[in-house]
Length: 219
Image (cartoon, rainbow, N blue to C red; front, side, top):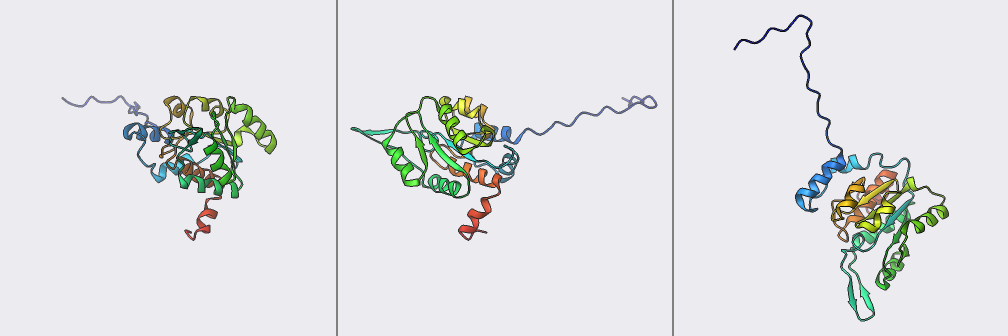
């Protein structure tokens, strides 16, 4: 069939180019397809750390069970125990040393968590039903703003904090509602390096990550 002649001056229809999905959506799709096991490719990490908040992060709020731990709670008589990931703990020391205040706020009280936070020198609030109230006190004390804070969580009780901070982050195996509220989703699961991943992103954002690398001769 011969091609239909175009009228003089008629424009050839142009199909608008489809905009690429935001990096966060690409990461969410990766995590859906792989069950949270896929590492985030470096280009996506770079995209995610560009401009999540204006200016440097000052405070890093963390949930504990399911975020700093794998969510398993052990009980032996009156004693409880948790599984902590050593790389997460080391990363919290980097954050503290490089101007980011880490704090753990948990809905449960735990002697095991308290002992671990004392070991790390990290401020800990256990048995907290209103995490936002604690957050408000810390922000006022530090002369910061919600917009300068990060919150990392995994479950519904973390949502009020996630909705207030400038940079809400969900661990890979967080509840769907928590992942939906997050600007960033980690590649690692809670208690398996998620916090280590967050600290690196925060320090990169703050321009301080090279100081960590130089400390160990990696740069």
